[in-house]
Length: 240
Image (tube, helix red, strand yellow):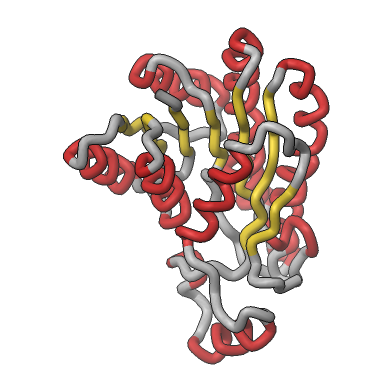
């Protein structure tokens, strides 16, 4: 049985990724932090449906916690074939108003977590000479956004991590790729007014927001593509 650890599975995109992999027959480990109850509830729902699933909790800005989360996932699933780094938080504010504390929290949740867990994954996957890592970045990591400068910077950092780590791990048969979602219909965008949402959709060639399930399909595609590595798949309906 193939297995996957999804961080940030307490959120809508992470939960969709977990459901998508479980439906394909994967054993899934669902990580949650502040909203761990969501990940735990989904794991229980998946188990009741006959899937192999467990829930793990922790603040992934801490490397020791990342090591524990990885170890608990391997203990529950036997091994981990795929790591999906989906944990993260957003920040909308003027650049000069971002405090050091807010910046450090943003880096820890989005970038450090991906780095530390990739280190855990690499050690295990190199031994087995196989594996896949998929980092969930953002369209803003590709193009940047005013009022989201700090967020854009850390999401761009995930893309740099993806490209460089892919080169380092390729000789061991491990792929590393990223998904960069555009405007996705989730609670993370709840701060937008209806008018703002309509204006965004008017800019998107396909004319609508994406869905968490569509992001999940892209994540699994990359995880199961043995000859694609170091790439970023933008899931934005053609929006740039």
